[in-house]
Length: 433
Image (cartoon, rainbow, N blue to C red; front, side, top):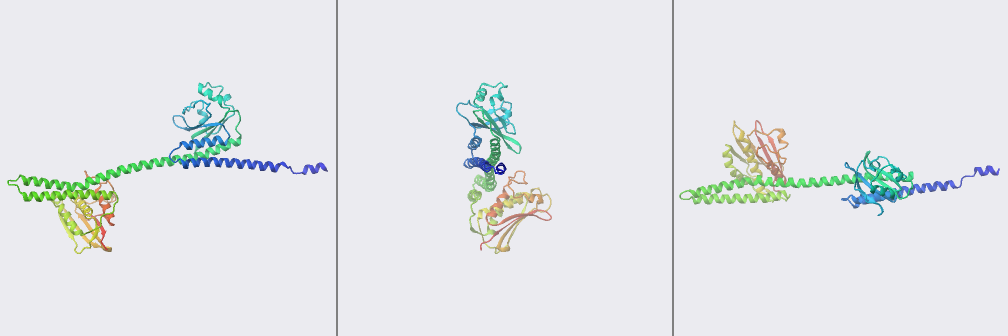
């Protein structure tokens, strides 16, 4: 009877043993979590330098499995590059690059953990170099843990004990899981770093392109007043060569040249403000009056191309607030484009019609229409893009600049094909309240 009662008695040590196992497993989970947290802190504290991250990964791996030292190598095409090393001073210096065919190549290059309880016995059949032979004498047990990303080996961590003492299954599992998590964090960091480098390259390229656009813009816009100034100065020289010199004509030609030079300077100043995204000047502008000046400037070019220029300017238009010089540059560019477009027209009238009127919501409208070859629907979609041009010697910046100026004034610029031929460029700008 006493024996039966003793047999049915619960085992007193079982709950304590189970509780102990749970405590050990919890401690392992907390150690692993603390290890990956240390890696994440290293990543956060070192956004531009990977070395502290490499060091932390290796240090935590050594700590997790209670090893004495370790090495961390990344896989490269040339071999296995040492990126972190934690070892006592007595160990010989390790080579920075191990070949894939070296004695440790297969160990570091394995996609599964490799546990070698006795390294000296494992390497005994191999004939090693002196440095590697001395290294093997300082290592008892070693564990190679791969770092895999989508089944691709990116690196490997080796942790070692100076004495011969096997790593337990739990220790191997712990450090293997940590290596997998650390690999994900490291890969994300490397991609972010690559993204930053790409962004820096793009920023540099953007600055170069902007500089090119600015240079092309200034060249394009300043060319007209400089050419006009040269024409006026040449005329002044011709008047001086007369006998007697026609001083009245010389004075008028030189005054016109000064005006052209002032205009070139004003364009440069406005272009600089435009590229700096500065707000346009808000002076009252009588658009009809400003257009008459531009038409006068283009008269010689129109005669050269055999084009008649007709203006249909509505009376009583509202005054707009804007930069007179910039708005004149827009119209000048549109008229010159129209004149040049008709250079290839062999039949029919060559004509440019400039119109103004007031449209909806008190907007002032300006149109420049030509009887040239027109534009195709495909061309229309690209006309205002930087460096797009249909001219053999064009820079492709004029219409881009025009649209920027009009939009800076709160307006819009667009183009349409005309029937039976030709094109019309139009813009609308809000008038003063």
